[in-house]
Image (cartoon, rainbow over all chains, first blue to last red; front, side, top):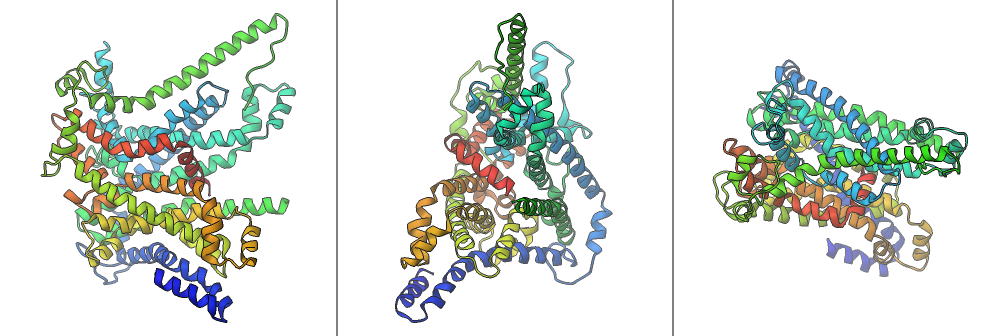
Length: 311
Length: 300
């Protein structure tokens, strides 16, 4: 590659077609990365889409059988549990992460001492892998060593806290851990938003005698509403891609109670040899992301056009 | 933002106002303190337990002030503990993660810088569309790429190898790095580039003399983002490698889920910390850039 480029450089210095060549340099330079990226985005998606309509089992085959794998998938009990979990998880995770993040941001915004320290504490989970987070929290949830053991040791002998060992409550362990990991992220973005609000607007409201709570509700929060949407979209993306956290925290259990779509894709493809159905499940994940992202993209596009029109 | 410190007037109302102010302060600090405790609990637990003796952990539970001190767990986790049949600890997996993360971070960052430079300063017909297409890679779930990668890595004889993972992470990373760099370079005034072109500077010269010297902030953001992302990645490591080739995330899951009875919390705590230390250090020393990457990655 460097040879080719220095060749082009040499040509450009001498040849009369210098302008034409220099017009092509950027395109030649971007080509390798761009082609790889396009193959990754479109080629891989089409490939998986095709496999999802083939009769592949242990190995990929390319005999087209239409939508049968999708029907197989949607009639599968475990998949129903998985997408049910995804909806349930997403609702709690997104709403509560936004709430905790906003509360922390507003609290930090009250001119507290040691702001940098608070921010560091609330954001560090984001630097750590889901694997580490899930592993450590699985210990804390475990009855014979973690939180329950600790509280009983304090003297409350019939205290029970066994989220992960009960199939009805294990999902809450995943929700709580997800919130723990992501609310610092929401906090950081909200804080940036709070700081971007025009202080004159706030002063004007104060002069009018509005209470701090009212100023937040009526002046500040409406101004940072776009941040809510952006954070919610990112969190929904996290939710749809949830995989590592479940593996490290509950392994999808007890039983199959906390199976998520991403976990089931992995199982179908690499544990059960149902490649076509697994590919169909992966395409469904992609569709879910599209359902979240396409309206958002349209909305932001519309907003920026509005802003441009207003000048 | 809302100024909670009102000017205290010189009248009896002032007393109650300052009392209310004090109560508000206490409420705010208790609220933050309560959440800080929850946030720090897991960190405290792994750090403390990596230095406690196992019998004491089993007796007093994971959440307890240390009553014993031992350094045994660290060398055990690093070099001797048995994971998935081999008793070499997790040092090999740690090195795997380094061997995978460093080249993949550098390569994807360089490609992103070049792509971003072209897409912002050397636009051509269709370059905006190309940018949007590359951008779609940011949102693509890894699950959609599993089967194609398995096929390609198999044909390149790179399955079950750290080097295969490098390739996977570079290609996947291009979308992020292009996004970061392009959005940063867009804000460099075009006049600078025009002036340089009038002076006869070409594509590479402008990149080397104008763009790169202005790039350190965004390159740091990109490197931090890529390093933590690739280091912490689990799915590809799990699917495409096994045993001695696994990166540290996959090894940690194998370690944590292999022996559920008589869990060796001391060794596991050290192992978990070893896996978490590189991104934690980056976060502590590059926090400002870390947050910047976060906000840019999220909003754009």
